[in-house]
Amino acid sequence: MKLVSKLVDVVRSEWMQRIAVTCMAVLLLQTASGAIAQDFRLANHREPTQSQNSTPDFALTTKIYYAGERNPNSVHLNIFDDGVIYSIPQTDSRFWTVFDLKKSQVVLLDKKTKTRCSVSMDALTRLAAQADAEVTDPKRRDRLGMNAQVKDLGGNQFELSYPGVSYKVQGVVPPSPAMAVANAQLVDWACRLNLARPRGLPPFGRMRLNEELWKRSLIGTQTSLTIDRNGMDGEPVMKAVLNIESSWSQGLDDTSQRLVDQAASYSVIYQQVSWKDFAD
Image 1 (cartoon, one colour):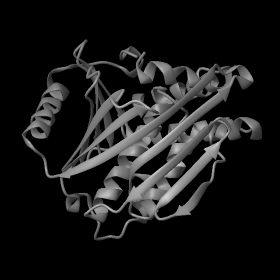
Image 2: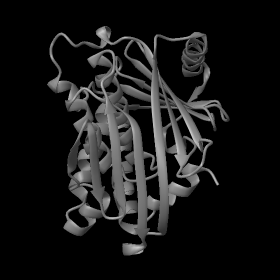
Image 3: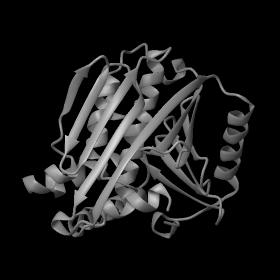
């Protein structure tokens, strides 16, 4: 069974579904009213000289392994090209995601149905705020990772834990601080998108860990994720130990450039559909 298939049920509890329904209503309202430019929340802390244009083009490959296995269960390629981030799975390449920081929008591409769907980053920002406001019970906030705190282990290692979930990550300084900013932007927007289109664990804890790495101009290259959900509050029992490896290459090779060109083409020729009609 694929990794996504194993993890997606973690968020299918009754109270997480209520968040998803609320978020969907907010999202549909925002997209219907048009896109409003919204800065990435961490970008507000950037130095004025660190603009999108100063970010070097690079590619980041992420491989996810079940603990003890030598072959990755999934491989994901993220291409950073002139203020646009192309997120392309290599193991199941049906869905591509384009995070366009210049236009402040996220575009989802479905290669099977040849359709596309766009959502403004402003809508995703409002959605995350709405989700945070929706959950007031301290116990539920704990289990969603909303109250999780990052622990500094030294040596650019960090740990974050909340009930049933534990992350440990090794950070590395990239060749350019702008690369760390760009990667933090990718993770943050992907987490916000995860609220509207649930995949895997609720993203709140991961967002906190990502912010800590951004503050220190680091990219996580080795991550251990332990999941031990015991079925509380209607959640399914879920146990998994995953190792996640990320590595980057500076510049874009022929393969990356070809994928960028393909995504640009799909964004034009695929039929535009509404958020609710896009394949899940």
